[in-house]
Amino acid sequence: MNRVLVDTGPLLAILLDTEQHHAACVRYFLDSGARLATCWPVLTEAAWLLQNRPDIFANLLATVEKRGLEILPLSADDVPYIATLMRRYRNLRLQLADAALVHLANRERIDTIFTLDRRDFSIVRGAHGKRFTLVP
Image (tube, rainbow, N blue to C red; front, top):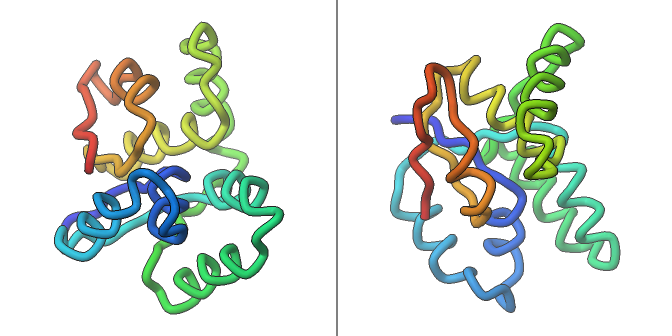
């Protein structure tokens, strides 16, 4: 089973049935068989976006607690790589969560990102200039 990094957008779309991409994201989540992984900056972004829906954010945390979503660690050793990515893509105004996912993709050798952010992730490159596979 392959690991796929998940961005904030699909997490929200899965949790909120009113989201435009809800059906596509739920379908990918259920049918892909992938092990989903993310990082704390993504969860922090989700918490901020769901600040008026603490019940929904609690559901997200429950998914993490049940091991349905792996949290990949970041440490001070990862900061220089993330900072370099943010400088390299400063014209995109790359957010911390996105830069952290790109760094983790390179570090963990993950080539697929579950995202709705086609603008940034279609431009940003992984290790050796490789494009990411974007789903759904």
